[in-house]
Image (cartoon, rainbow, N blue to C red):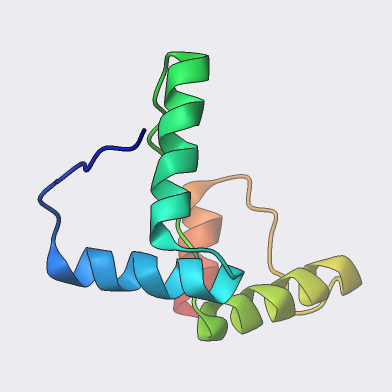
Length: 90
């Protein structure tokens, strides 16, 4: 036997969740049901705030990581604050 659960949710949040579920090939209903089952089994709920980097930031981070591995575009180390400030002002 099934029952209906009615909740209030921000319209844009629902639309985004629906798009992600669709991209994964599942219904939003299936996503919600699975999360409720996990909530019941684990008897806990976890909230995270893990930022997702946009493409521009991902590209910049990849370049910086590559430079660091190759020792390019690096300054320092600095042993005093004055040395660091001199480097920043040069």
